[in-house]
Image 1 (cartoon, rainbow, N blue to C red):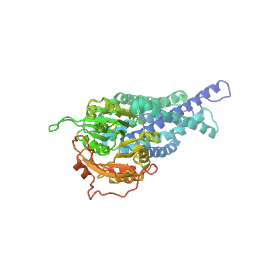
Image 2: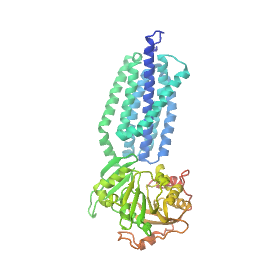
Image 3: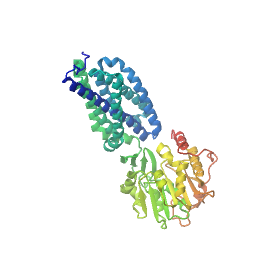
Image 4: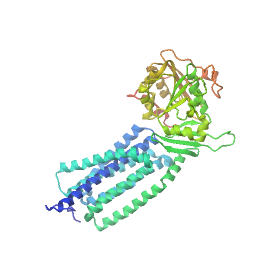
Length: 530
């Protein structure tokens, strides 16, 4: 096998365009491979964030393992440099196959095998190993076209590599995820990866390939194409089947919005039950069960409405169930709902059973819905509200932990009227007591006087809330004198809700802040295993 450059420089004018074309082809391959490699990394991080919820942890694991493996791969590529072109083709085909199928395989490991953690580390290591082997081989191939100073060659390669990484970083959130989704997006990138590698080797470096190498690469190309093609065709069915494995009841609606996975399940009506059970899950976390959601929402809303309530602000609660309870008071003039995800709001407005459950509350003329980040919106809000209802997702993810901090509650205090009241859903004081009392400490540090209380919601267990008012005088924990007839909550139940048993006393834990989100650490530790 020849080791001479495929477009050797002989000083003539005809050779110059040939080596320039070959050199440009190598740099283009570097550009495309770098974009694909970064997409594989981002896909693993995003999938872990959706499935596990720990964005920082997942990013640290994936990036740490992959960068380490890239170093190992660069060293492992040394013996392959004598057959750089053939080795590069095999590596790109392997990377295209494993990278393209990575999301599918990890989702299967999560849904069917409960082996997500080990599978993630193994996948990140293998992909990193293959990505790390690319640059040394491409460097050899570039030098065979036209030898140049090492520093100049490295600069050219890494410039193309870094610019390609930028393309991959932008394409993943703004093109691949919105248009193709995670499964098909990874498969598409795998196909692009294979085409880029093969195009370079089979054109510029074809003369370096032995007959045996050509047969192996050709057979490998067919296998990769068939595997990726079959996975593309069956991706939708696979996702539906795997998703159903995660839920007890049949899935009746599923979508992945820009922010989260939204799933509705509905149980088959059983003997002894008057109606079926509709459940909403966001990123796998239960938001409500139609069997007992009224317990949660009555306890959340009605004590806070004992007093002035003309202007009510609801943070979260895009399902419309808290708004349904608020609108039972005719003197409520306006309800402003700030929920990040328009897909949840659209579902609450259009899905027949969910709309029946919330009574069409979000379409009431008194209701204004703003789809924006609550933290950012509060920073610029100039309005004042008599009541603020914080019905936000639990602080077990980096994105939601900031909504349970001193800084966030300070912003809420700035929009409360002088005699205003705030109620916060605060998790379970039984299953997650440190999280619960850290939220209470954060409210107090933000200048609120608090009244902790808790009720039993069978779908969630013992669930806690915090009623708060600015200043040093705690608000009265009572139902409004004109409260409508409620199914669960009455004066006696509410009085008992303020009593905590001896095995779950008040804990002296520090507040949570943006720079030290203690509530996130508490929530992850306490809910592990439940």
